Length: 192
Image (cartoon, rainbow, N blue to C red):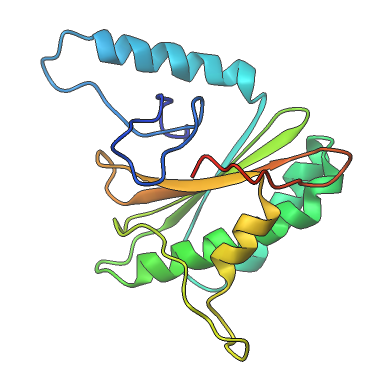
């Protein structure tokens, strides 16, 4: 399954994806086709921007996490980005955990979709779930066992964010991990 089509970020989004990141959109029925042509051109350009692309769909079950983590580490290795493997694995774990919880919070429970896109210096992780509510950082005290996932995503990724996917329903939460001297270096000026 191809990742959602590429679009420029729209200013109305709370957590816009930076230019060039996948966003879902479709030409309205009976439309003149200009928007569709733009989407097709951007989708075609993605093949050159992200030469390594992978997609998996998981049941919204806790047992999906070990599979997703191992798969992410393998994709990092195959892309020659094994130095990012641990960070990518942790990011996938956090995003998938949140996606599974969000998918299980609505009925009917839907699958969770994971895209991993890579070039020679970066890995982009996208997780889709059918729940339209954007991710919100929890207020966790020092003794809490959970609630720090988005803080970890913020710390390990160069940039991260989310955007709604009205045509599919739900949302995508994404994180970008970049190889700068072998480690992900968070930018303080994030796009999300």
